[in-house]
Image 1 (cartoon, rainbow, N blue to C red):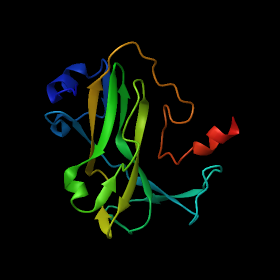
Image 2: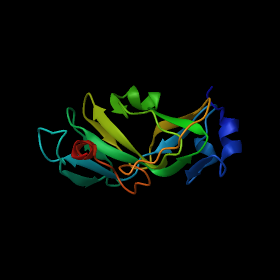
Image 3: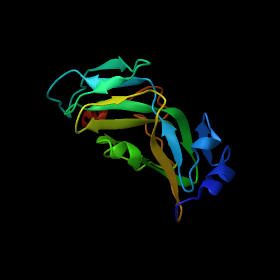
Image 4: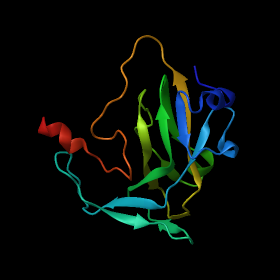
Length: 173
């Protein structure tokens, strides 16, 4: 079951935290999240799952930033979220997808107990100018059945900035 916008509102500061929260971003069954002004772009043309891949920070200026096709950009939400008792899910907004910008192409499934900023994997089919603060994706919440453990990752929990892949840590075990 997906929570309605009214249910999201009733759970704020209890089982759902969205900071900052602006009621005008609330939808009938989701909440729009905005794009932060910092992005990461990997430095190397070939990435390796078993190693830390270096990335450079890119700042979106006030006049916007032209994204190039065939390049992966990592962004993050402006809003910090915490979810207790619900499963958070993230999807790009359809208005953004209709411009050929794919936001959060994969990994839109969150975990109960996640606390932090959402990293967005962004890729475009043709060059597109983006702007910081745009409502770029939407978060929605599923109820969960049965006993559960809360998310306690040491890799991504309580992140502060854009998070590159930390998959290489899985190989260190």
